[in-house]
Each structure stands twice: as structure tokens, then as C-alpha cells.
Length: 189
Image (cartoon, rainbow, N blue to C red):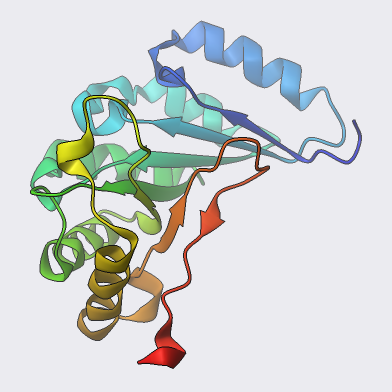
């Protein structure tokens, strides 16, 4: 499929693979001329920042692919100095750093908490990317935030931080090729 220019490593956690396994995968992808980017989705950098080893950073820095790391961080309290140091190493290696969060009732369901997260991410060199409305899965209904509440939170967030710090509000819809943005309905205000 020569029309594909980006590969995504996601599901489970791709950074659970050992450095030599990731090296092998990178080498395979680098041999495909039309692949230009590799996007890696992971929660490990926030849970175990030491996973960002010097060897991994070195390998990323020499890749012919543009490497993007999408962190999965939901609250500013998760971010500490070891995470910031790991992100600094990746930035120096030329890795693009993004974050996606899930909007969770009782965790980050207000604009100030999300503003704090966006600012803490930016201070660590990570750009807010997506804020997901929670998928309807069994056992998680108590974390659900309605679409209307989510829109209101996002409208408030727009008043607290610069536009580049506002993640896209989106939801995953089965069978769709990408995330589906939720309209903030700004014109109706």
C-alpha cells in the first residue's frame, strides 16, 4: 500500500518491547520507501520514565523515519521531574512529543484541571493533542462525562490557555478510519 506514509504502534503498550525488538521493527519500517513516520502510543514514559533508555533515544535519533511519541497522561499530578527529563532526551533526539487524555469524571472533568495538564505538558515539551470522550465500556460508567458537559468544559478551557494548548475533543467510533472530532458548538453561544 504505497499510499500509506505512517505506521502506528499502539495497543497494549509498544514500549513494553525490548530495545532490540524495537530496533528490528524500525529497521523493517525504514526499508519501506513510502513509510515516512512512526507514531508510538504509550503510557510507559509517565509510569516508568526509565523506559526511555539512552539506547532507545540513540536509535530514534538515527532513524530515517520521523518518530512521534503520543503519551497517555490524564492529570498534571502524573508529571514529575523524571518524566520531564525523559521527554527532554527524546526532544533532543528529534522525537515529536504529543499527548492524548481521556476525559474522566472526578479526575480531570473541569477546565482548570485540564489547563493545569496542558501547561504541565507544554513545560515538559509535550503538546496536547487529543482529549477523548470515554468509550462506553462495561465498568466505567462512573467516569463518563456527557458530550454537552465535555463541550462546556472545552469552551471554558479556551478562556484559560492559548489555543495551541487546547487538545482536540474527540471520540473513537468503531469502523471509522480516525478519531471523530466533537463540535464545540462555539457559534451557538
